[in-house]
Amino acid sequence: MRYGGRKVILRGGLPLLLVVAAVVAATVIAAVISGYVLPGIVAAALVVGAWLAYGLRVRRAVGAWTGPRGDGPAPPGGAGVREPRRPRPHSPAGAAALPGDDDEYPHRAVAIT
Image (cartoon, rainbow, N blue to C red; front, side):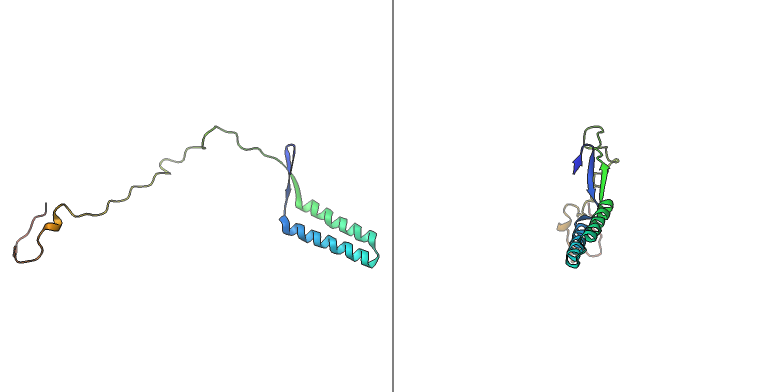
């Protein structure tokens, strides 16, 4: 909730709220059954007061940063740029057409250009 320039914050969340509600309900039911209604209501009020003191905070609503327009400061140099991948190795043109180890060129070196 917001009130002017302040907002109310619930600490502990829903589980704490459910525990407090169960304790208050048990206190009131026990007070009605036992006949001690006034002390039971005072005890329930103390539980609710302790929950309010612990669980609720009123804080100043801090506005969003009103700096220069745009998408924020520039990232460090090259932060969004991937390093290019190394090219895959490929055989030179015509390498597949070279003869293999057959007897056409016995004991001679073949130059690949």
